[in-house]
Length: 127
Image (tube, rainbow, N blue to C red; front, side, top):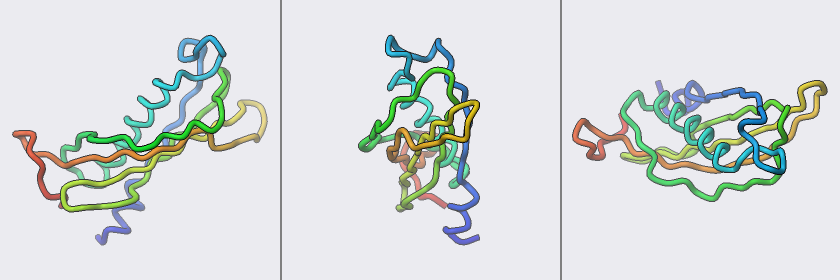
């Protein structure tokens, strides 16, 4: 399988409902909760791509462009954007959907860098 096929097969989509216990006093999703969900989605994407032990080493600029209100559905989309020798980058976009209409828009996006590691937590080549 070539790299592009691996990238295509490792694309990850996760759906979540935004409940009040995950929102702040503005009734929108906590930024930290959004980042946690993004890192988890990125980790799954990186692992599906490499099938190796992967760790997050960096989160690049994360843009919060739209608030995510309680009572909506979010879709997190993760996909590999760059593959290096021992590391790779995964972009994650969060789309917010209203539950009872077809309204949907991108709310958050960011990139995460992962490194493949061995049993001693040392970087290894991505196979």
